Every structure is written in C-alpha cells, then in structure tokens.
Image (cartoon, rainbow, N blue to C red; front, side):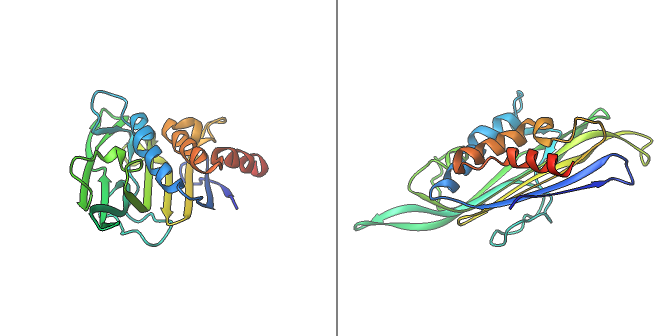
Length: 233
C-alpha cells in the first residue's frame, strides 16, 4: 500500500513529504527494471559532453537502505546489481558464478555557488565477461540477477544562514531497492513554492525511473503518488 506523509519544515520553511510504496515483482520484471535504469535513466542523468559527471545529482547516502540482503555501500552509490552469470557449460547445464557491479558517485567540484558536480566510478567483480558493457547487464543472457539497488539525491541552490549565501543542498531523494521478487520505493522531497510539490515534475530522472517501473510491472508509481498527494493535501 502506498503511504504519504506531509509536514512543515520548521527550520528552512516550506513543506516536506515522504512517500513509500512496495510491490511484488512478476517474473522477469527485475531484469527489465535493471535494463531500463541502466540504459534509459542514465542518459537523462548525464546528457552533456561529460558522460562520467552528474550535475546537481548524486547517488544515495550510504545509510539509506530499504530492503535487507544487499551489502551496504561504502560511500554515495548510484546503483548496485548482483546475481549469477554463466561462465561455462558443463554437459547440459551452465556453471554459474556470482557477480556484482556497483557505481559510486564521489564529489568532484562546485560550479559557482549554485551547482555541484559528482563523478561516476564503476567497480565490477565476479563472473561477468569483461567484454559485456555494464549498461547491458539487464538484457544480457545467460545472467540471473538477484538484487538491484538504485538511488538518486537531487540538489537545489538554497539560501543558507551558515554560508550567508546560496549553496547546493539535497532537497529530494529517490530510493529503489529490489531483492528477489520484492520492490521497495521511497521519495523524500522539500519545497517552498506552490506548485513544486511533485518531485517527478521537478527532476526528469525521477519520472524516468517511475516509467521504467511502470513498463516492467504495470504499476504507475507517479499516479499513486499524485492520488496520495491530493488525498492528503
């Protein structure tokens, strides 16, 4: 069941929300979600000439987890996927070896007073063939994914008392965890201006993630969010 909580931000002003939902994944949906996030969401995150850089976006905080069964990240993490891959064929069956791929988003630099840049660093371990591009893991065979975690934090330039000026701060977070046939989804969002309550409209990558989940499962998370927002407004 989707759940939305609204409250006032007494320190910075404005309002904030927390939206959560979960569902059971149909067969094959985990591979489709991995494929969609790696092939179709990443171009939305990195549309410029530097494909290894994120503008005003970073991966999830290491302390943010929704489902057990996935190793905790050591630093800000964009995604982590793991499972087993076929490395050889013995008789009529394959020999399988575990694999894991993780993409971190370390801080790179500030651009002026309003923007922040993070880099992308990918690490691979286990039985994946070296020639297989990371972005094709979701659609490649024979691979059996077991888990997938995806996280985004979006920065907005905010006037702060500490710096006596503007500085980029995280105001919206999207978390997606998939383990076996379970999916958990969470968004937190802060806003001040009327009409800015929908994070899917503020951050194109968030809508892309919701569209990937909808295509893979039939569940329209953005529509669920809108219904809860109206009901709690």
